[in-house]
Length: 462
Ligand code: BG6
Image 1 (tube, rainbow, N blue to C red):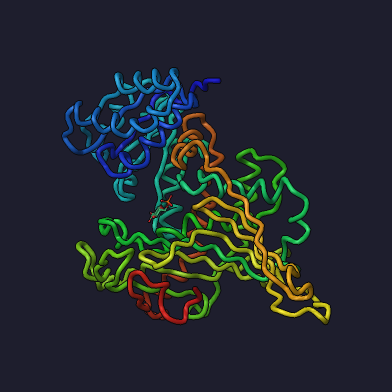
Image 2 (image 1 turned 30 degrees about the horizontal axis):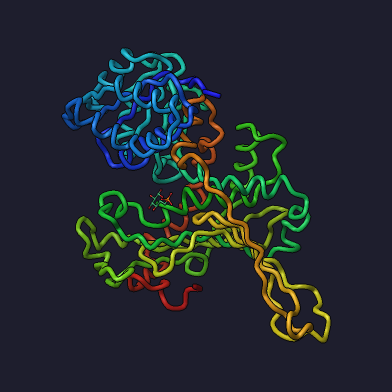
């Protein structure tokens, strides 16, 4: 079945930038190749004076992979987009330029701001509601603001332009299949829900340790760091899906209400030296490759004290989760990649005397790459039947047909904000982290060090 998009034109601002080439266009291509977005016009705009050929080359090379796997209809559609797409040189912050372009496009238009946050903000500030064609959707990349206050201010700017359900705040983790699988796992089964609370769960860890180092992203990353880059957005969203109450439906309103309620109950408490940690990598070796000291990398300002590894303990003060720590951690240039949520259950109230060996707690592990589900249980035998042994039940979950950006774009193009972060949630995610950021700025929490390629600073749990 082919799906005609609600949006007629996708306008990508920042079309000559890295995000567009690496993630947006390949995500779009998969969607189109699978006949899940037909009839769309694609327009790129950027401050670079690109020729039509330069743009076309970018589009075609980003489409190549999906094209090779597309059926005949998908191939036709990708070809049609390549033949009709155009590139405009534009200063989005100049009064009237973006509005004039919007007036020439077939409406409704989705405007994707694939731009540095301050430029997106300036671009929105010069727009007025009257200049926007009917049905316009505004698509904002992360980070959305830099504090609760700035996120609120940006929400007000956007809210004056289009209704909330036409604003898409992108968090591509919401387009990852295993992140969304949390909903099926929790709410389409009966066995978990009765034990999914403080009576049975001891702690929840959400870990996203990457072996990637800076990868030439100093301009963005040195102003962000691990806390803002990963925890403020992606990991809090995962936490909300793990912690929320069951929604009545998977409509955007029910689901996003449930996410918002969980986040509203969440906070990181003082003392911040106990409930948060930060560290920065020094020179080391990753997979046989030499990695320079972060502080000496091109484009890094050492005095900013940007962390490349961050960990926080979030408390969720409600009936279900009171007293259960949610540990969120993410870092770069780490020796082992570990991308998973680990739910650790409480020990049995009484282990019958007579068992030998170690009785370890049950752990449920949801892997975000590779996409897996694992449940660690204790069993006895074989061999000595009274000796406890660890067994792991494992399921390999098949990755989604679409790339995460494809999933997110599908929502934009079909006019469904389900996978977009809602205004109040975007502010709340900053509200949770603002006190930690302030404590770090006051130097109340030491900036530790770890050599690239290791598991992190000594004393941090592996
Ligand atoms: C991005 C962060 O949002 O997510 C990157 O800016 C990070 O620093 C990336 O590497 C991880 O997501 P994925 O989908 O590449 O695993």
